[in-house]
Length: 104
Image (cartoon, rainbow, N blue to C red; front, top):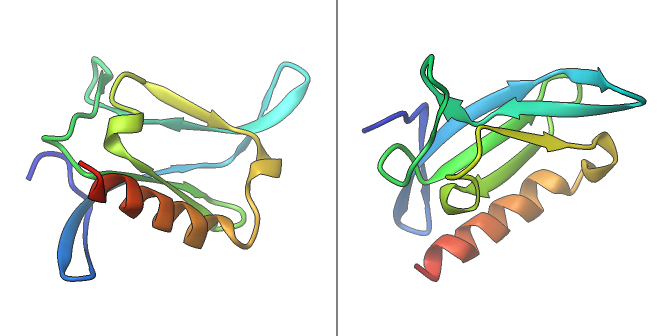
């Protein structure tokens, strides 16, 4: 199963999810969430073999941003500014990730 943390069933399909969490961190003159979206000590990017979706969870607000793995498989980290998150982020990005995966 590669690097799967969770399995989710949606519309009769199973999705393998890797969960990453971050606290709000200062970076130069701004704040943001920095998610390590890679595996192992060598920080290898995840691939479609490892999981289908990466769930980036904000520890303080518990919002989740879902990414299809194909959108992150060349990255070691993903930075998201706090203003990008709101009460609709979790549902919106889940729907977007599923819609993307259904096109493959």
